[in-house]
Length: 103
Picture 1 (cartoon, helix red, strand yellow):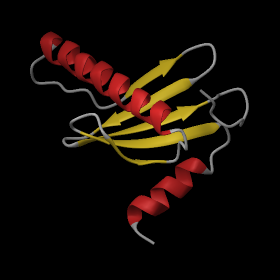
Picture 2: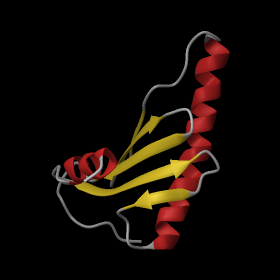
Picture 3: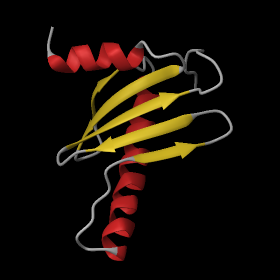
Picture 4: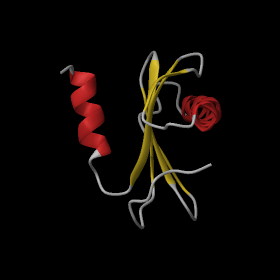
């Protein structure tokens, strides 16, 4: 099993994790645990845009700095984003319980 598969399985085993998405630099999901393709694409596109804006804010405040992690919490979900040079790792979780993700 590859390192990516190991990491996917390790993250997915945490209580409350609803989905994991790896997104390329164009905002296209290249690997996901979310069965609904439309929902996966929607998360990928919107979070890619938000992470890009977050990176710009950090860089505007200090050009020598860069975004390393982004965490967004709403009433229903928490979205954690780990940006890399060419990819984003997006983890969606429900911090209150471990139900499946729905549209």
